[in-house]
Image 1 (tube, rainbow, N blue to C red):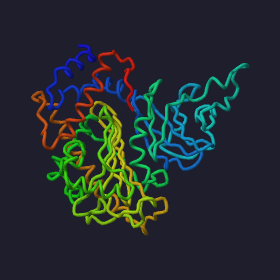
Image 2: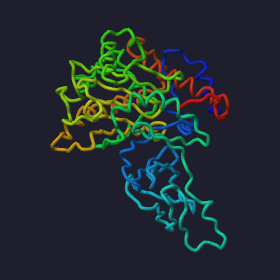
Image 3: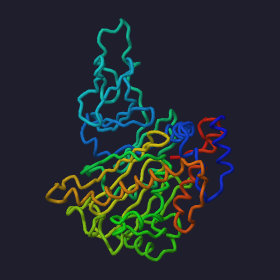
Image 4: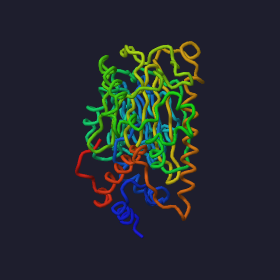
Length: 415
């Protein structure tokens, strides 16, 4: 059966408020269409400006079939390229991160400038034109410390997302922070299951004892349902906005990205077992208030984030296969914060290290059960799983027209 038409048929006949049919979570052909129509065409969060502090700093990442390298050039600009030598295709940079004066392919030493231009290719034929063999560029944008790429030949306009999220992120000065720690785990489940689990706290009380010491389970916290009428949320927004921190819930018309601030439980300051700060030094010198809760920023399909007064925790989702997803977590602190003096690394990372592993087990059990021939889509809780409903609706609305178009670029602009 043709996967594209089958996928479109199931989307068009799906029950509103119910989970998706089994092949959306398991089928390799459906996964290929997810990659082709979403992951290879839309803006994806890759990392942070502060991971590329100097000219020559680079990081690499694998997005589906595409190896990518990001590098800061001599003018300070962050560039992204396909990490494939224009000679015979070998990877140019084969480590996760590093420093390089030039990008040199280890196979035959073809040498590239940090802006992608080919500088040197030894013993090529007379008339060989180096200018035609620079590294292939990938669209790259940086906003308030976050670096996004887009693999499409004609990327969608990034400006609408920048305009919405930059005011929320900018006060936290993440471009001037540093990575205190990072981890990557492989969750044996489809990327959509990872997101569905993230988009609700219906499961939190029974599964996340560490997180529940500070993070509220109320559905209004996500901002998707009822936040505008929640007195606690309204009071928190007013308090934060009074000190110059944009806080009210905002979501783009297509439902792909959003931002809001939320209070932590019992007036906690940070995600620790005590609710007290994990880092003595503020994350940003521009934020004067002490109890700002968490700034939650989401962008489908790659990232959710929690930004607090003392540190930030950022998450990146990258599919590996139809039934495997890589989730990378990074803890950011002020660039001058010193481990062992300003923070204890174990205390800083404990809550989300435990929560991530708990979520991994949840996703894997969910994925295992969905493989059963007896599986059929079940109803989401409208009271507690509004965020999941919103995500699945976004997915269906987003990929449906692209399936119908046969993979041609969508006419509407999304970011």
